[in-house]
Length: 132
Image (cartoon, rainbow, N blue to C red; front, side, top):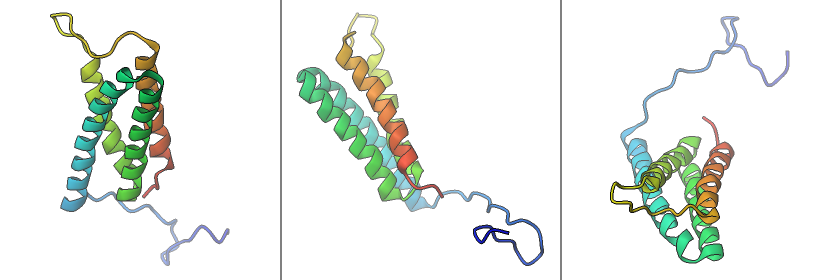
């Protein structure tokens, strides 16, 4: 038997503990990260179109900072996922065109780089976060 695998005194294999609901403080932190993700998504959408090469990089750096910072602050992957969920919902709502023909995202390469780059950063930062 390898030293990394332990067995309890009863002789059966060590089972994973069931998940508990988050505490009120952790749920409030996740909600705050969700709202902050929506704000960063909105700011990034406006910034990436304003100054094309620099604004795009700054918007993606802000998104990565939120995702990775949320994972580190919550000490779990859930912190990155909460921020990424807020970011994704805000950005997807901004991509929809209105009946009047107004839209925020143009059909240019910068908009697609912001959308796909932000999603890739969310996955990377959630993967880098600690598991339970």
